[in-house]
Image (tube, rainbow, N blue to C red; front, side, top):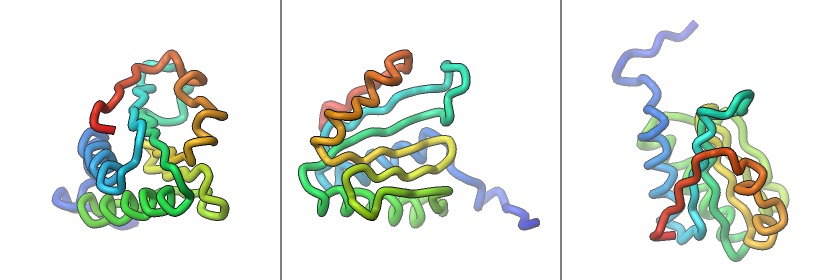
Length: 127
């Protein structure tokens, strides 16, 4: 069992979310929202962060930027990631925060905000 020193402790959900938002904005991700799921029974995580991009190249750039910046600034690696095969919907799971990066057409199709409409939704005006 590996011990974690306090200086190496994982970042808070808020700090982690801030790094993720900045990473999305750096690569011109659009429609950035966060869904606070903490008051929803049986939710699989505390927060979803959702954005979209106009191309698969941009989806990959956003996902790569998030993974790099969270690793560098927070010292955390994703617990799980998927969607790199077709780059239409990339999911990056940091356990308490799960990021969804959609190609624009797929975001409109899946409508996660509507699916989780009981969540507290925060829209980011700069996106």
